[in-house]
Picture 1 (cartoon, rainbow, N blue to C red):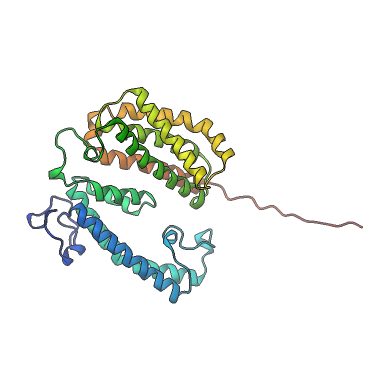
Picture 2 (picture 1 turned 90 degrees about the horizontal axis):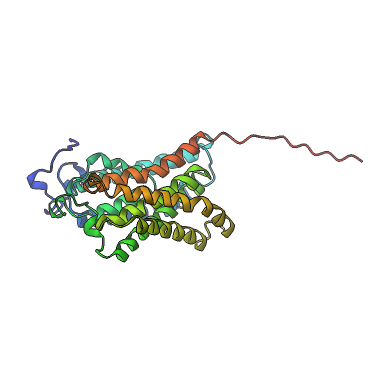
Length: 314
């Protein structure tokens, strides 16, 4: 079985119906509707199978969040017990057929959308892969997309300024919430990733998305960036992810960084190559924050251990 990265063969174009045998091959292309339908059915089957095995075989709870944190009571891999290792190995083995099908369909969908096939690596990036899957479900096939210098994202954006601003906020705010949860709850890092890289990226992406449809002014780009980071802070407060005092203290740093990101986003959207390679450019930007957070997590020194002795003198 070959992993073909070239063009789709004539018999497997995106418009043709998908056969069962096509789920296991990496050749050809598939449309966004088929990709979304098969992905939804596949995830439903996998989640229920995982839940049954975890509950009735290993007597462990299993929910959606366990795909990111399968074991809540283990901080490091060196602390795994024998039963934990058997459980994790079993869940990985159950996932292998679904991973193979997911990779095959993702390669076909990338080829259909005219995107570089190496972007399939985003399949394995936590949280970011959810945005990646959503974009693949929305992007049209290459032959039906806008030609010339237009971005693959432009057909998805409204023509009005208010509509483009709304889309920019609807994309960046949920993404920001996910990155905050990734850094704080999973990687346990409160540093450059959360307070510097995240505000800059949110402002940058908000201004970039806002300007894809029609070239905006610098003033409007900064306004959308400030709106996105403000709504992100209010969302973190509304969902009780952070407290009011933490939000106010972070705002002193986050607002200027979002403005700087918005200015860079304004400059970037004026470049023709950004419109031509929009999905690839967005993928690189999306990886920036998780990479910084992961680097902080790996480089963090082990907390010191102190001995406390208590004595009572009578």
